Image (cartoon, rainbow, N blue to C red):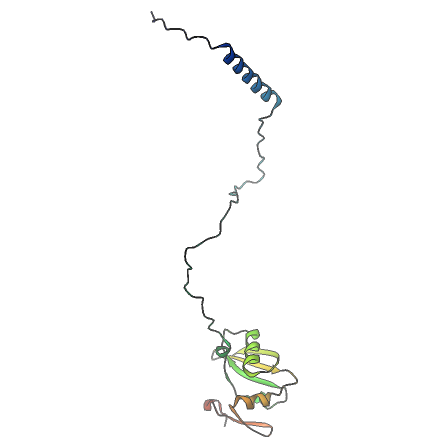
Length: 173
């Protein structure tokens, strides 16, 4: 036989009434469907991880101690002027050997800054030896021969170029 256990004392009537009220409240909520949870309908076959908050980095010190220097400045873009037959023509064009990485806008700005002239148009080509040649057409109010005189690399006689003094290899005989 099992030993007799003491029966627990019945709860006081106030606690019983509280429990009954709580149960009735829960019953009402279930019947009313307050706590209903509708499932989200999944329409795609692949799972995409939800986008979460991504905070911007706030480093304690900069990754680089100093900003990078622009190596392609105006003086590096234009290497040297060339002696060209186009200078003899009246199309108001100067010809330069320029850096291969320079684009037409950069060449235009460099000529504008270095020679104080307005540029109308820039045409470029890459020569077979790998150099980039730029044909710089000046604005109508500037003369290419006057700018070439300013450069000092050309010895000019009336109407034609005799030689390029700065680069003897380019002289044509």
